[in-house]
Length: 274
Image 1 (cartoon, rainbow, N blue to C red):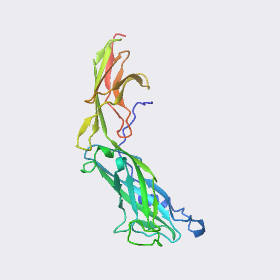
Image 2 (tube, one colour):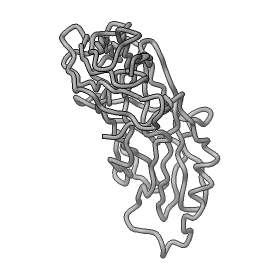
Image 3 (tube, rainbow, N blue to C red):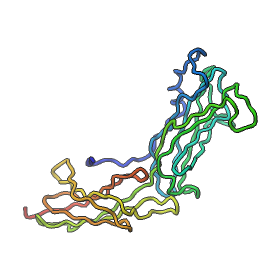
Image 4 (cartoon, rainbow, N blue to C red):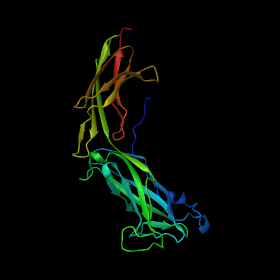
């Protein structure tokens, strides 16, 4: 487990444009002899790999996939669906006007582009939505045999094209004392870990979570792990270490598959009488 001074907090998501995604797919072969049979979705991407949200926050990101068939591809009717924990699903919406979902890039291939918004302020979004989501897609060749069913014969589908992780935001406070200490004196640190509560809003205690008590000496670029702690049911944790030199003390939470990593603010301690 590594820890580096000054590690920045992620500030947001960089959303890729549909035009850029389309440009990367123009290598699609156009000769029928080069295409696989049956039709296939040969590329799919979620344009971010991780989303961290607090209560009542939202973000929107792109989803793109590419599909081909000897008969060509219909530009409407395609879908992009995320499948998440506990069988939950989220449906993306097209980026094109009207009912159009795809753009032809050759006689046999098309790029389908979607947007998906995740809003933790919506009633349906609860803490169970945190975790890893996988992308599935569906599109229709021009020679699809339409029979009134959702997936008529000839429909092209693909699962597990890409993944994205939704994480609950984390907050971590700490207080170290005394602020001035003699060498060898015990430094006590208390802190509270909280996670965004998408179910009810606000933040909730992070119970039973591992924390590291860390010391950052003033005259060294390296951190020192002092103690391993576990939060109580109310999210609080207590730790201590021995004062040896001037520096800062803080708590570190390394995150989980459903919650974001976070460090508490630094608490500087002066050691006198060395």
